[in-house]
Length: 465
Ligand code: BES
Ligand code: MN
Ligand code: MN
Image (cartoon, rainbow, N blue to C red; front, side, top):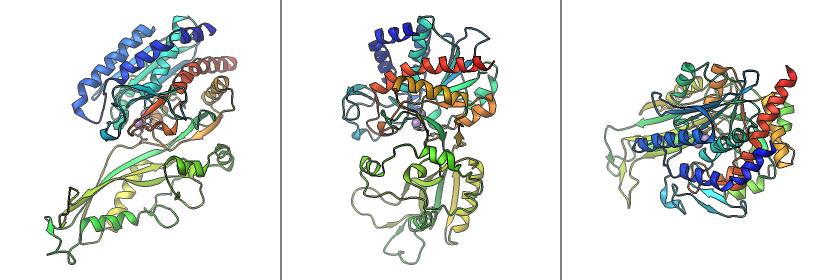
């Protein structure tokens, strides 16, 4: 594979230029105003894949945004690695907080990124990350050193819950058959402490509405005698978490699997520094479930958070009004074996139950997904660990993170294959936020590591046959 690494060095600048081209396309899936950019992005990826040496490149229609498929099959005797990524990105707003245009990538240096980082929406989540696979495999194909079969699917609806990908999988089971799935859409603990993600949280997402009076009221004429939906909603929300940081929704913890003491000790080998954590996000103190530290609270434990809340007058100046309605969006991050539909149901029941009789309450549910755990005995985990140890020259630790990639559990269910989460981002990359960025170190380290994963995975499977 030395030839491939030589090829990577020679093409370093072009790799970056091509990524910049992708980052210039505002492929925002949440906003239909960008529908053309979604198509443009899928086309652009497909062209790039053809030039990179992939075969059977296809833009597959779905009920929603297209999935880009490609493969390079060299022998039916060799294992097949399916790579997954997403080309859709989150909306860029609030735009005024970006230091540079979110869709005009630039490189800036910082203390964390002395070699520079690419600032653009999607740089880390996930264009910069899935593109590492495209370029790593290009270097292997062009130097005739690809060690196994590869298939690739890049979808365009991850940020809106991958609502049509399940059907796409069901309709293409044999086309997508594989031994393992490889995904770079997560982060490592730090550039000094490389990690392989072995757990993701699940998600259950609801929207609630509390309705009081049948119209907005003058808060002087009516205030004091009527239920104010914002006050009521605030009370209800406040009661959802108790003083020990436990969620009060009845039955919420019933299916939670406690992490084993061994896995817990292993997770805590990560040099998580509470002080640094606080400093990095400008906090004086942290809080959460009693009996767990911040690292655990954000990964192996479930939580409920209000993601948005509105109602009444929020414009300039003062308007004395009791609104008719108040709303909130609430996310629940889940752990194995909590079931998202079941949790939504439990939440709905509970929320209706705690509502005072004076108001009407509605709960609607949005997309969700299951949590996921990859055991460290899995051959995919081992290959990822070895590959990263080779390129980082450091011990690699397993890392459970709190984010969600709902499709991962569906992959297991439908394709019968485990997903290996070998992401190269940092938690400071500001994904979903203004000034999202992705380190050049991380981008190139990923491109260097992926060939080793393919090699070690293949060798391990072969030695077992
Ligand atoms: N790539 C992220 C998930 C992620 C990031 C997991 C970092 C672990 C570490 C993904 O694109 C994402 O944003 N997922 C959403 C869920 C989705 C249903 C919108 C999330 O976690 O909020
Ligand atoms: Mn992502
Ligand atoms: Mn995301």
